[in-house]
Image (tube, rainbow, N blue to C red; front, side):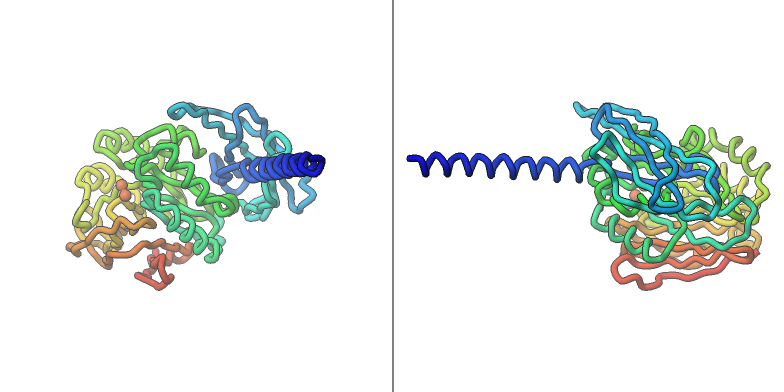
Length: 381
Ligand SMILES: [Fe+2]
Ligand SMILES: [Fe+2]
């Protein structure tokens, strides 16, 4: 009898200990979640961090040139409701940083939740010709295995930041984003991502609330070293029309060596499921011609295509090169080369690396499955 009672007590004790251990593991692993980097202001001197916590928690970023974490900045939390769930995010912007410099950091959100130790690197100052490397990804469509795999490959490529061209998710609902933010754990916490909105994000708060970008976020520009980057929302003709005066004004003030515009939807593209967009050619192409835009980067068509330089509807060595990047995900469509096509391919998941310096932009498009090169090209002034 005594033995039986003792056994019951031991079993109860073991169950409680196991439960507590599980609880501490869950708590330790659970927050902060979805930690990712971007820029809202000058990439050379600032860094923006976002992470998720339980509702009501406070947050702080500790950072410095080593693991002593000599500086800190508090986060600004915000929340939104999706279905019956309150989604609670922190945004913290660090300012006054040294350009082109690596910092250590960790985030804390209501003890005992502390992130791992991470690093980030600030950008190159505007007008500085120091070479840099950027990766372009698009259209993962909720394929989180490929999303994680491509980010791991990109990390190996030692890129300075990542440009996303939209359609990260298929539906834009919170459950899909939760899986996406799990897939990027530990990767986008060290490489900043700047993206444009894709039609599959659905113009929902799940996109706008979970990323922090400059200005009012729908369209914005920023300078990284010698390159002016213009992020646009290409989903419809009314939106393209609304942005046209803003693009003209932005490019009027631009004096960078290179100018790259980005939008989810291609202007010229020989994709068979989705092709060119005449409204973008009319409304934006003419502006790109006038202000000597070097590249327009797009996704959406789920094929790979690089155009010849095009100006005013003709092949022209002074023209804009229109890129259609293939998907990270596995929705694969077909392409049939047209008069503007310089290179085209189909049937694989992929990413593209751009190396930018004072004399050239060198592009390398690669397959996700084996890293083999699909296309290599060089743009020179
Ligand atoms: Fe897509
Ligand atoms: Fe799309």
